[in-house]
Image (cartoon, rainbow, N blue to C red):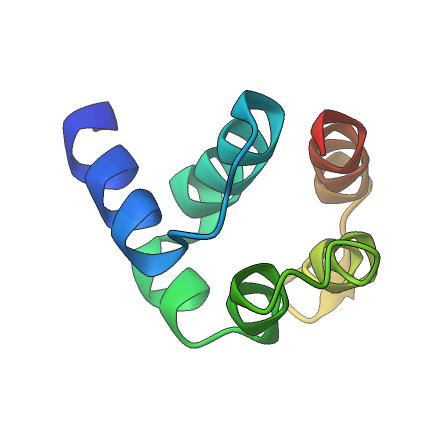
Length: 83
C-alpha cells in the first residue's frame, strides 16, 4: 500500500518539504484514499504553502457514517502534531 500511496501523495502535494508533513498527509491518504486528498481543500492549502490553515482542514475529516468518530478525531490530532 505504501508503494501506491506515497508516490501519489508526493505527486498531489509536491510543496511538502518536511518529513513530518509527508507522514501526516500520507496517513491521511492511507485512511481516506488518494481521491479524497486529490479533491480536497486540504491539498489546495498544502500546495499554496498555507501551513497555518492545514490543521483546520485536517480536523474537518472526522466523520464516518454521518457522525463524529472519536478515533478519527484522535488520528487527525496525531497528524496535526506531525506538521
